[in-house]
Image 1 (cartoon, rainbow, N blue to C red):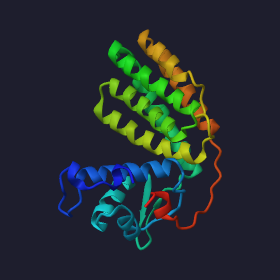
Image 2 (cartoon, rainbow, N blue to C red):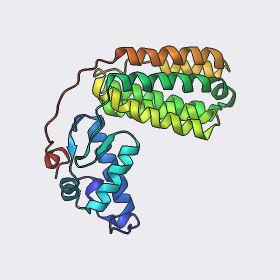
Image 3 (cartoon, rainbow, N blue to C red):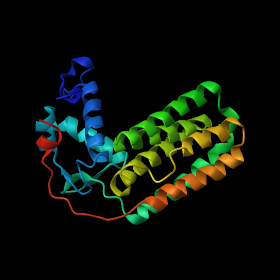
Length: 240
């Protein structure tokens, strides 16, 4: 398998005998499986099965699942264990409402702080996102879009709000993966480029208005159809 199956020599070993780098790779593998919908909403994630698939301890898997739960990708339920989070219609609305309140409010500061170097890095993210969509790599495009919005929030200079936006983007990624449409993210492909143009021009107020329209378009594109999912075949999903 890929790096998620390699030994822990690439990183330090935790108290449970698992490598830190290995844990990071497993976290990434599970996150990608959720975003790519190889693991469906509601699918149970048994600690013993994951430990066997990845060749690490149950303690290590438990830590990874706890981290995913903090990111709202996984839900931990007493006596039932872990399962892939199933976003509801109400949750989706609340997440996008929160994003509009926070991200739009950050645009004036982002416009005041953006530098040519930052603009270039953001433009590269927008380009890669567009290329991923054109290539049919929906999960990659979703991740790049989240990175774009997180970087914008960081530009505003408020670390607390930037961290909050990062959490909202993580939840949005799951919502988009589950309820979005293949081939697009519910907005025009040039939206991020236009947003950058406004920020570089120092027009934070117009950027805020554009951001609100951008986020509303994404939310409006969602098609919520909830489906039940049986226990997944983890060996097949992770190529073990």
